[in-house]
Length: 482
Image (cartoon, rainbow, N blue to C red; front, side, top):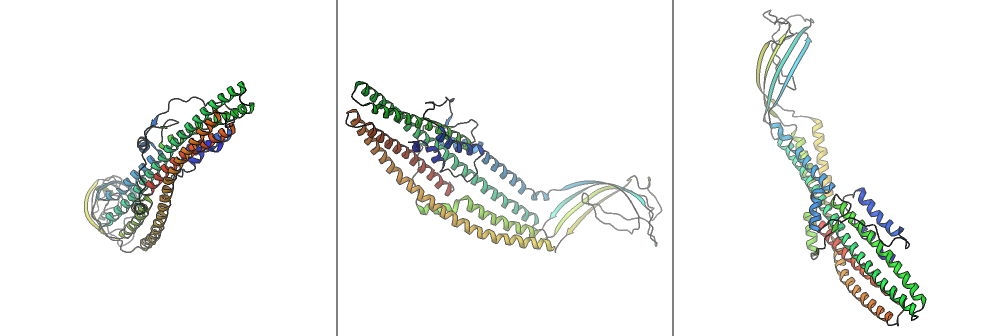
């Protein structure tokens, strides 16, 4: 009887989520075993009353989890973040602007030349100081204030390669989001049917207790009238106490199962119940269909393929970084230098006030055509592509093996449930016969207790069988990527 009543830990033992359950769920699962171990026959015959618990159908629970389950919400935010990262390279097509202020003290050995040299503003240096035949180390002040604009003209495919690499990472994150959605669906479905099974067990235990109470009252009356020996009442009392303990445990397990469902769906309240609507379990598809869907739709395989594509896109982006670049630049500046110019004029302020205006515009072509570190990085990236090729083959083989195993479990559970229903009917018929014999004075309380235990065990096993079938079908849907 104790083995039958501790059914929730056995039900939860089938729960193998691919995403790690939170600490609350783990505590709830462990507490199920504590309920079975700690309740003593001398305990109270009823659990503390609980407020009304909200109930949902399975589609409602799945829809609620879609927007409130923390793991799913985190996966969705990761996808949005990676999608934002993928838009960064395309911003290189937008014009960039900058400003610069400089105060420099330096020598002025110079000739007339124009040189770009500022990261913020593409600003040419205009040399116009006096050209000396001898080197002059006398320092002079120079000031500068400038604003500039830069615009990409042609990138030779570099930005497109970087954008493609970012979009490939978005595809990987989309696969991860889909995987989390499927895992959440599986967890909620398993927890949902665990509540249904726990309720079936509780109902069976409650009915067993009620029947035991009737038998106890009948035995008590028979003993008082002298029609039965006192041992019949003693045995009936022991059986009643045993079934009461079973009912208490089943009530506790039902509440724990509700808590597990609430945690799985991300429900804000401590417990979540299942609605009384009948959930239909679709027929099991053929093995060939399961294998085909698993190889074409399973997120693990899609993720492995997208990782291979992303690595190839990364290789192209690395190689494209050595391609030429053509961009336009323009700047408006004011400057002054304290060194005397060729005409002997020294600007007002002797270089400390940028009073000489200038503008410039240019078209720049740059080509880092040889960079050994980039070539090495591209070679390493290609090596990772080959590694991902091997991972794809391993993932396909594993997915196919898992699909076959899950399919066979579903077929076994489907076949076993019919046999369990027959066993329950037989156990009930056996109990009815034992009860009739007991009331007629032909049977003993021991015979009746054995019939009651067989009936209760059969009803519990039928509840477990229904849970196993629902869980197997949920795992089958997960394998096929539904």
